[in-house]
Image (tube, rainbow, N blue to C red; front, top):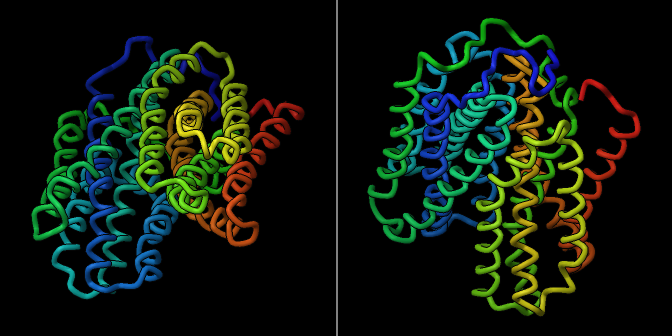
Length: 394
């Protein structure tokens, strides 16, 4: 049911760190493994002579797996319990991560991708539900800012490990599997404190996508612009005459903006009675940044300064959107809405690269910036529409 932030839903103002540390550290270990695994798997497939098209198709299984896992995660957690479901997901993802090394036939990588990313999607949904349920209402933004920052660090550590150990032999797969299995420990220790789903969600899964549209639309735009932007920015920069090393450095700057802004943004959102205006302003910042992007391509420092803030605002759509979701719903409804939240992110990660790539093919290099602006502009219109109609539910 709908629950205003700061309501009497059993939360206390003290942050219950053992429970939060368990959920945050668990998903951060998974973030390290994913950050290591994504480049590792692509490199190995290329060494085996697999075409780029087939590598892309295999990589797309991540989004497919997320869209399959999201609707059923809450039901499984209701039957098995949140902590037990997470423990099984840890084991499945670790075993499948190791399985890539032993799978010689390329077709075997498709079910392995589905198992790995389906299990990690379950971990993301239930970890975020756990964090949202355990966070005190007036400090929810701070807690989710910490979560987003630690997760971003985990994703950054993965590629560093890959660059240090390379792609040869069993070692990188073993490290990835061990990183995931580390998540088992904090979940098991805090299993008695995991939230209880003692009732089923009140509505059909798809209904939750539209129940809090300001949050689910925000995470869709985040997924589309983050994955689409990161995937195609090197191509855009290269066609604009920027050296590859400078383009890579700009992506790093954007990642830094992702990490450093999430805690401050979370703390600011905690001071707001309604987080929707903040989400609106972040989308406006994303829109403005996308529009001026082509005009800054020949000044690296101006571009870096803009992308630092732009990266923080784009990622803020996820952090503040998740906090907004937690402020509106509780219990089984929150778990189901969290699954819908992750589902919308997965859809965005599939739609973003396709739309931006098509825009470049149709409109030339300028299509990159205009496609990004289109996603942010659509969210601005949705936010304005919600404000004008003033729905009390969202």
